[in-house]
Length: 314
Image (cartoon, rainbow, N blue to C red; front, side):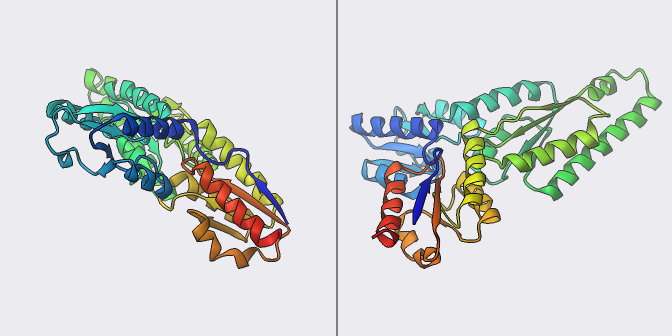
């Protein structure tokens, strides 16, 4: 049996930066280190951090005697108010938000100041999207699926039609003139599915570009895009596919869905212990592809490959 490991499998730059700096912080600190939310969506990494004394918290209020304590901001980023709250509590923030996510925060903040409409394409409950939304102002709509897309487009159309009618009644209204000049800005969660984003973008342009200026910023991370493209190609060339990553990992779940659309013998596992129970699925396979999400450690990937080799290449 041939086992093919994807070249883009494993840590992306933002995740590696967050993990390396957190390890270093924990090694050099004599006090307990706190991380607001899971640093990354990978149980193997989180267990290691716990052993090193990094405590995961869900609120800054969980930090005992907070003045002077250090709290790590995870790779996904946090909401705008967290920074203000930490400052008031005297908490020292170590911001390990992915630089690409921070760029999105800056980008949408500029348009939010003008009151522009923002379509944020992504999973509404994902921490990155929750954080980014807080920088988007009051005219932001989070769009996760086709139904929400249709609803968002229709709401914009209703607002535009109302403004047109109002302008006929009061052509001298400066408020209406200003409102009609609002732009529509489209951004995406960095790990959103690229093909679906393109489909959403095309529909938005078709429906609204004749009525207002539409600005598209494809903020899907290059590493995410390349990993998805490689997964699509690899899963078409094999008869078995193993995707490694945390069950809560958005980017890993997308890799699994891509794999499953091309290869019926596709599984998603967190580590080698999960793989053991599904090995029978690959008994008749001649080629197995292996891909891993952006927060999957190299050690976990190697352990999965060793198990596959031991099971089928004895």
